[in-house]
Image (cartoon, rainbow, N blue to C red; front, side, top):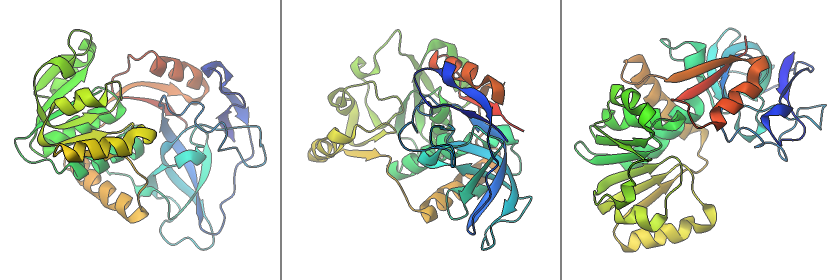
Length: 315
C-alpha cells in the first residue's frame, strides 16, 4: 500500500510517499480502507519516539484521525462488518496517512454521519469530538457569554457551533480573515487578535475556551465572571493543578482535556452525530490535498492561515 512516512521529523520535507506492506487485522481489529484524514500541527513529529510502522521500525506514518470503510475484520470482531463507513481516532499510534490501517474494534471507532462525505467526516475525531467533550463539561447555560480563543481553527469552528447550540452568546477570537466565516457559523461577536488583546478589554465571560494557549492564566482568570469556567484544549500539565487550585479559591473552575473511556467517547460522539445529522453543526474545510502532497499540506497548516480544517484525500 501507499503511505506517507518519515524517520527524522525535522521539517515537512521529510514526508515522503512510500510503498509499505498492507497490515492484516488481528482477532479484535478491523482493517480500514482510508478515504480521508486531516492535517494538524500536532501530527508532525508527534510519533517520532512512540509510533512506528510494524516491520519498519525506522518509519513513522503520521495522522491521527480518519474516515473510511471497513475492508476486513478479525475473527473475533463483533462491532463492525465489512463495508461499514466509519470515522476513527488513531491516537498516538498514528497511521492515518496511508491507504489502510488496522485499529482495535473497541477503540475510538464510530459510524459515519449519513449526511457527511468522507472528507467532512475525517474532521470529527479530534476537532469535533474534543470540542464536544470539553464544552459539555463546561455546562453552558442559555444566555451565558462564551469566548473562544482560536475560533477559526479545527476545534474552534466546531466549538463556535456547539456553544451556539447551547444558547450561548459567542465571541470568537482569531485573525480578521476569518471574520465572515465565524459569523456564518453563528458567532455573535469577533475580536481580531492583531488589533485587540481580549485579556485587556475589560469584558468578562462565563466560559473562556482556549484552543491555542497563548495567554497567561492570570490574565484569563481576570476575564472570568464569578463561577466562570476556563476550558483549555492545550493544558500545561506541570502547572494545571496549580491553575485548578487558584481557580477554585476564586470560585472559578478549570476544565482540561484528559483521556476518557470508550463509553464516554461513544456518548459524546452520539451527541455530535445527532447535531450533524440535524444540520445544526457542519465541518469547515479550507483546502484539500492528495496524499502525495502531504508536505505541502503541512506547510500550509504551519502558515497559520487555514480556516477550519485541511484534509488529505487518500482513496
